[in-house]
Length: 167
Image (cartoon, rainbow, N blue to C red; front, side):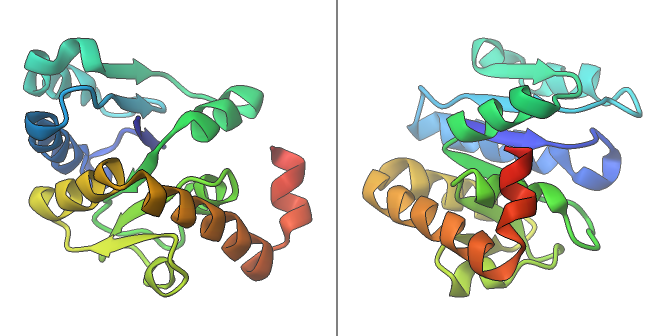
Protein backbone atom coordinates (compact mmCIF):
# COMPACT_ATOMS: atom_id res chain seq x y z
CA UNK A 1 0.00 0.00 0.00
CA UNK A 2 1.42 3.32 -1.19
CA UNK A 3 0.05 6.37 0.62
CA UNK A 4 -0.12 10.08 -0.07
CA UNK A 5 -1.65 12.14 2.73
CA UNK A 6 -2.11 15.88 2.32
CA UNK A 7 -3.75 18.59 0.31
CA UNK A 8 -4.51 17.56 -3.25
CA UNK A 9 -2.99 20.62 -4.86
CA UNK A 10 -0.98 21.09 -8.05
CA UNK A 11 2.17 21.83 -6.04
CA UNK A 12 1.99 18.31 -4.56
CA UNK A 13 2.65 16.79 -8.03
CA UNK A 14 0.21 13.93 -7.71
CA UNK A 15 0.59 13.55 -11.48
CA UNK A 16 4.12 12.24 -10.84
CA UNK A 17 2.85 9.87 -8.17
CA UNK A 18 0.13 8.64 -10.53
CA UNK A 19 2.67 7.95 -13.27
CA UNK A 20 4.99 6.25 -10.77
CA UNK A 21 2.09 4.09 -9.58
CA UNK A 22 1.28 3.07 -13.16
CA UNK A 23 4.92 2.07 -13.60
CA UNK A 24 4.96 0.13 -10.32
CA UNK A 25 1.77 -1.74 -11.22
CA UNK A 26 3.38 -3.02 -14.42
CA UNK A 27 5.62 -5.28 -12.32
CA UNK A 28 3.69 -5.34 -9.02
CA UNK A 29 0.03 -5.77 -9.99
CA UNK A 30 -1.18 -6.11 -6.40
CA UNK A 31 0.03 -2.61 -5.41
CA UNK A 32 -2.59 -0.19 -4.08
CA UNK A 33 -2.46 3.61 -3.97
CA UNK A 34 -4.29 5.68 -1.37
CA UNK A 35 -4.67 9.41 -1.98
CA UNK A 36 -6.02 11.03 1.18
CA UNK A 37 -6.76 14.68 1.75
CA UNK A 38 -8.92 17.54 0.59
CA UNK A 39 -9.09 18.17 -3.16
CA UNK A 40 -8.56 21.94 -3.08
CA UNK A 41 -8.43 22.49 -6.83
CA UNK A 42 -10.62 19.71 -8.25
CA UNK A 43 -7.61 17.70 -9.40
CA UNK A 44 -9.11 14.29 -8.73
CA UNK A 45 -11.33 13.95 -11.83
CA UNK A 46 -8.32 14.27 -14.15
CA UNK A 47 -6.16 12.14 -11.89
CA UNK A 48 -8.73 9.35 -11.67
CA UNK A 49 -9.05 9.40 -15.48
CA UNK A 50 -5.27 9.08 -15.70
CA UNK A 51 -5.44 6.09 -13.35
CA UNK A 52 -8.65 4.58 -14.78
CA UNK A 53 -6.95 1.34 -15.87
CA UNK A 54 -6.05 0.78 -12.22
CA UNK A 55 -9.36 1.92 -10.72
CA UNK A 56 -9.75 -1.05 -8.37
CA UNK A 57 -6.34 -0.35 -6.90
CA UNK A 58 -6.66 3.41 -6.38
CA UNK A 59 -8.49 4.65 -3.31
CA UNK A 60 -9.37 8.32 -2.97
CA UNK A 61 -10.23 9.62 0.48
CA UNK A 62 -11.13 13.07 1.72
CA UNK A 63 -9.49 14.56 4.81
CA UNK A 64 -8.33 11.89 7.25
CA UNK A 65 -7.61 12.89 10.84
CA UNK A 66 -7.10 11.47 14.31
CA UNK A 67 -7.26 7.71 14.75
CA UNK A 68 -8.18 7.22 11.09
CA UNK A 69 -5.04 9.04 9.96
CA UNK A 70 -2.80 6.96 12.23
CA UNK A 71 -4.50 3.72 11.14
CA UNK A 72 -3.95 4.67 7.50
CA UNK A 73 -0.28 5.38 8.13
CA UNK A 74 0.27 2.23 10.18
CA UNK A 75 -1.21 0.14 7.34
CA UNK A 76 0.99 1.78 4.69
CA UNK A 77 4.06 0.11 3.22
CA UNK A 78 5.44 3.37 1.88
CA UNK A 79 4.58 7.06 2.11
CA UNK A 80 5.35 9.35 -0.84
CA UNK A 81 5.86 13.12 -0.91
CA UNK A 82 6.82 14.55 -4.30
CA UNK A 83 5.86 18.21 -4.01
CA UNK A 84 7.46 20.96 -6.06
CA UNK A 85 8.52 22.42 -2.71
CA UNK A 86 7.92 21.97 0.98
CA UNK A 87 9.20 24.05 3.84
CA UNK A 88 9.09 21.02 6.15
CA UNK A 89 6.33 18.47 5.61
CA UNK A 90 4.93 17.40 8.99
CA UNK A 91 3.22 14.43 7.38
CA UNK A 92 6.68 12.97 6.63
CA UNK A 93 7.42 13.02 10.38
CA UNK A 94 4.03 11.46 11.05
CA UNK A 95 4.66 8.68 8.52
CA UNK A 96 8.09 8.00 10.00
CA UNK A 97 6.64 8.02 13.52
CA UNK A 98 4.15 5.38 12.38
CA UNK A 99 7.09 3.30 11.14
CA UNK A 100 6.51 3.89 7.45
CA UNK A 101 9.50 4.21 5.11
CA UNK A 102 9.23 7.33 2.97
CA UNK A 103 10.01 8.24 -0.61
CA UNK A 104 10.58 11.97 -0.79
CA UNK A 105 11.74 13.92 -3.82
CA UNK A 106 14.76 16.20 -3.69
CA UNK A 107 12.44 19.18 -4.01
CA UNK A 108 11.55 18.56 -0.35
CA UNK A 109 13.95 19.10 2.57
CA UNK A 110 14.47 15.47 3.62
CA UNK A 111 18.00 14.28 2.71
CA UNK A 112 18.43 12.82 6.20
CA UNK A 113 15.99 9.99 5.51
CA UNK A 114 18.80 8.43 3.48
CA UNK A 115 21.53 8.91 6.08
CA UNK A 116 19.21 7.50 8.76
CA UNK A 117 18.19 4.58 6.56
CA UNK A 118 14.46 5.22 6.78
CA UNK A 119 13.64 6.29 3.26
CA UNK A 120 14.69 7.41 -0.18
CA UNK A 121 15.40 10.97 -1.33
CA UNK A 122 15.04 10.83 -5.11
CA UNK A 123 14.86 13.01 -8.18
CA UNK A 124 11.44 14.53 -8.82
CA UNK A 125 10.58 12.16 -11.66
CA UNK A 126 8.05 9.37 -11.96
CA UNK A 127 10.73 6.76 -12.81
CA UNK A 128 12.81 7.68 -9.72
CA UNK A 129 9.76 7.57 -7.46
CA UNK A 130 8.64 4.26 -9.00
CA UNK A 131 12.10 2.71 -8.57
CA UNK A 132 12.18 3.59 -4.87
CA UNK A 133 8.66 2.23 -4.32
CA UNK A 134 9.53 -0.95 -6.22
CA UNK A 135 12.63 -1.44 -4.07
CA UNK A 136 10.48 -1.37 -0.95
CA UNK A 137 7.91 -3.75 -2.44
CA UNK A 138 10.58 -6.21 -3.63
CA UNK A 139 12.60 -6.26 -0.42
CA UNK A 140 10.31 -6.70 2.61
CA UNK A 141 13.31 -7.23 4.92
CA UNK A 142 14.74 -3.88 3.88
CA UNK A 143 11.32 -2.26 4.30
CA UNK A 144 11.14 -3.67 7.84
CA UNK A 145 14.61 -2.35 8.69
CA UNK A 146 13.66 1.07 7.31
CA UNK A 147 10.45 0.97 9.33
CA UNK A 148 12.38 0.35 12.54
CA UNK A 149 14.86 3.09 11.68
CA UNK A 150 12.01 5.48 10.87
CA UNK A 151 10.60 5.22 14.36
CA UNK A 152 14.06 5.53 15.91
CA UNK A 153 14.84 8.59 13.79
CA UNK A 154 11.69 10.38 14.95
CA UNK A 155 12.45 9.53 18.58
CA UNK A 156 15.98 10.92 18.25
CA UNK A 157 15.25 13.97 16.13
CA UNK A 158 11.86 15.18 17.33
CA UNK A 159 9.93 15.26 20.55
CA UNK A 160 8.61 11.70 20.55
CA UNK A 161 6.12 12.54 23.28
CA UNK A 162 4.41 15.07 21.04
CA UNK A 163 4.27 12.70 18.07
CA UNK A 164 3.29 9.67 20.17
CA UNK A 165 0.45 11.63 21.78
CA UNK A 166 -1.04 12.15 18.33
CA UNK A 167 -0.87 8.44 17.58
